[in-house]
Image 1: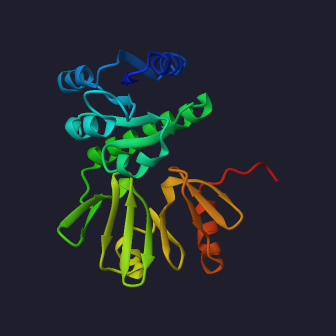
Image 2 (image 1 turned 135 degrees about the vertical axis):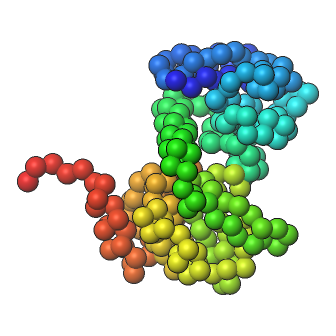
Length: 239
């Protein structure tokens, strides 16, 4: 059961999301807010697992609210504007829903939320030292949780590590990260890309779609490696 709140300055948008939340037994709606300042106070004083937050609001924008809330809860952005997607993923944002939000897309976002929170809980229980890495960026040494990595993109002697909390550029090449990341969790699928196996949504033709709806090309050289990795998870009927 996830305790959640809805923050939107439009009552009609709150009504739609409230209806969606009430249709899913795994969600418990604590409160709804048209004031982001009042919502922030609740986040700071009560146990909120998940907040649905609009971007453009008076007093505080959704991005500003997420900055102030920090790690106290996770967020799903619900907005009519697509241009804030990348900035939103720099904070504790799990998904980005563009209004009007179809119920099927809302359910996928909740499934993704539960999957991420479950993995984080299992990681905390295991207490292993291999659940994160550090990379050098231009200005600092950056810690990156393995569960947050979506994919790695290489360009010459640089790589960009795309995560649920933003992207980080480092003076490395794809081979360096391929050797550092666990092959049970990550797989090189193209000369320029490494993906997180757990973030795959589906594979279609020569494209791999991740659960943030990003399309990654599948190189012919790496196709058999992908099928071998997925074969362990594919459910087949009786022959």
